[in-house]
Amino acid sequence: MTSALRIVVTGLLAQHPLGGVTWDYLQYPLGLARLGHDVWYLEDSGEWPYDVYGPGGRASSVPDCTANVERLRSVMDRIGLTDRWMYRCPIGSTWFGLADGQRERVLRSADLLLNVSGTLHRPERYRSVPRLAYIDSDPVFTQVKIASGAGRFPRRVDQHDVHFSFGERIGEGSSPAVPKTRFDWQPTRQPIVLSEWPRADDGRSVYTTVLNWASYTAPSYNGCRYGQKNVEFTNFMELPQRVAPVELEVAVKAVRRRGKPTAPIERLRRFGWRVVSPDVVCPDLDSYRAYISSSRGEWSAAKHGYVLGQVGWFSCRSACYLAAGRPVVVQDTGFAGVLPVGEGIVAFRTLDEAVDALAEVESSYARHSRAARAIAEEYFDSTRVLADLVDRAMQRTS
Image 1 (cartoon, helix red, strand yellow):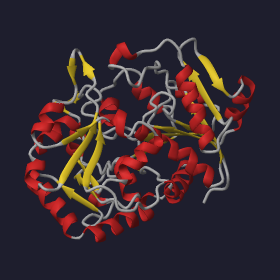
Image 2 (cartoon, one colour):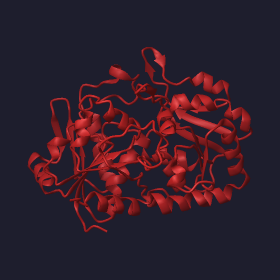
Image 3 (tube, helix red, strand yellow):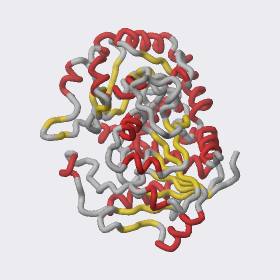
């Protein structure tokens, strides 16, 4: 393992204070600190602050960053990184957290910057750090944006020295639908700090998931359209009727865009889905963990782009279910090439396969539950994932 380094980690902890999003980003600085690294958190996304409980779009914008700063301060205090964070509010380009001089000293002396999900607005501003690593958490869509030359995005990605992707099979097992780029995408996956996700006791009898129905416009490239979860989910609308008395629940928010809800809540209910609001059942760190841990397991469709690309993407959320000892029944995105499937993780492609997958888990639930935790320990433990990530990020090729 690489000796202790000064590492700056980016994210959207202040901008998107949602339970699942917070866990996705939080486990990087927390896991790295527990490995003994000198860790600092940086948020400079350029995104305007918004009211997370608002109606969506411009109507949810707020005039200042006070709530964002307080949420970030609270999270950093909680994980023992008090006074180790930097946040730039785009309103007036004002910095919070570290004083200007200390922030500049930390950035000048850092060994590595991990740009998680490419959240930095202008990574070129941080070229004083010797190694910049880009972590692509939205594969296929990232490659489409690069290939299509969308705005400043390709130049932003180009500012980094090394490139990682949750699309672990890009280049060797992915579909021709995934555009080629000039970047060498190395495989990585979501780290899970296992001590924060202990195996849970028995919970409810319901399979659950937390989802965005469609969070951005589906892009197109070379005549191919790359849809989101709504495209795939509609193929499985009849599933609750097919697997009864097994119960299926989705935590989904019907944000309104152009006067229409993004998720068809009433249609879902007519087909037998239990529908709850994530604002109620899992709005923060603790309630999100409790929601997952109290579920019987997860059933989830994937974004259409992931299914089309077959790049081996695996959900950060599903990894948390595994850590809690909850089996996951999830749509195949090519991850069988990098993760064990059949026990703990059961993949499906069609409605009939989804029915059979749930029946398989129900037929031997205790075995699948043990396998779920074992997979988390072997494949998602932050100690392993992050040690490997840092080692490869620091390697220089001639």
